[in-house]
Image 1 (cartoon, rainbow, N blue to C red):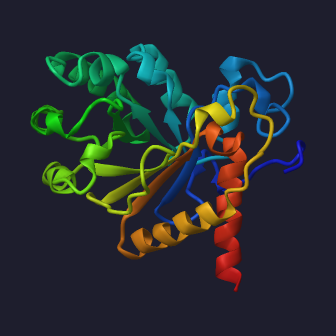
Image 2: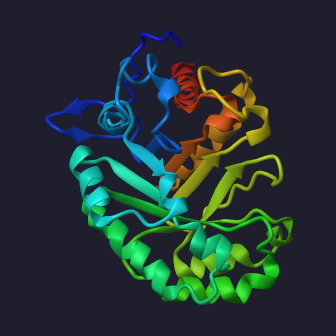
Length: 272
């Protein structure tokens, strides 16, 4: 992708946006990356101005910063005002809930986070519960109780990172709560392909150690991987599910390029 190329992943009309395909929302994990200047952001874009440029290229984003703490209501309101109608924000639950408290005695913190994020109003997408690697199947009852107490209204997705959850009753548990099983491309977990809710939530994570710093361009060929995911997305869309998929910089070293390549693969498949 040439540095000067403007990525255009949806049609924009008077402040409205729509995804590149009906029901398919593609974005990146976070938007505040200075080394995206020239490829996504014009040179000299300030940190405060990056979101305003991001929403010109994508129809959704997964907010990474909420993992480190619930944002201020004024911050959420600013995000909502910057985003066009039709744009959707996904967001991670804070690590205080998932990693520090392991979901235990965290109802107040979880409800406070959800209430704050509901300030996004019609721009609110799924909320992601990213469980830590040491959260094993022994915590099934804890997860069950936690999901039962979450406020109604938002969509929720659950990501597990311990292999004890494989071949467990987790999908049935998530179906009971209407929560999506998060499907990841991550070295420590096999690819899962089961949708447990009316929407699917996909994360292309990769290995953080491969790209410790700098995100100036793709350095890993993921073509076959992305073709596999494209076939899975086709299945979900045919089933009438909405799909949210987010690329992390550590997947190929440049998440905007991952999204663009994924769309190129889909365009190529349709043209055959």
